[in-house]
Picture 1 (cartoon, helix red, strand yellow):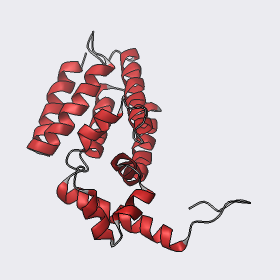
Picture 2 (cartoon, helix red, strand yellow; picture 1 turned 30 degrees about the vertical axis):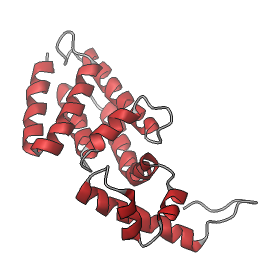
Picture 3 (cartoon, helix red, strand yellow; picture 1 turned 120 degrees about the horizontal axis):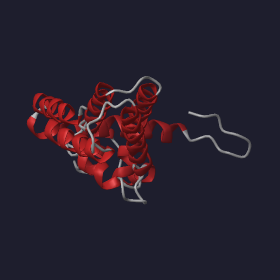
Picture 4 (cartoon, one colour; picture 1 turned 90 degrees about the vertical axis):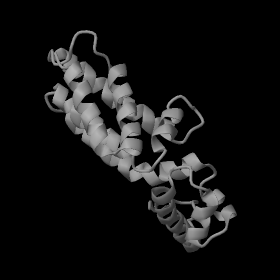
Length: 189
């Protein structure tokens, strides 16, 4: 946590503790019941009232954004490393697999992320736009190395990510991996 600057009050110890408890509880509840699990269960698991939960996280998406913040940072760092290397269709495959693992952290998260992409009020929109930006750049770099089939586009990769994440959630990671392999082979020049 950042140091409080002049004139800025440091958060109270109980507020910091409650935030930490809420995030840990949300991770447990969402892993067990999906991203749309009742927030009352999160508050109860954390041992706080629902008002405390909403005081820290005014919306479900704010809570999910806080849960994913560190994972998002790791994902974006990985994407930046991929962009810094020679990009091939296999590099795009690495990105697709990383995003699919990320999006299937909680049952139903894929839908939440997809809905947040065009929702300017969503606390998740910035992260979703960053994921798309990395994907777009990887596709552009792969086009320059003649790795992509003619007519292949970033939208194809985004469709693959969404479909594979959904497949991972509902049919399992093996089916998602098969889908990724088949589509990437079709995108290969």
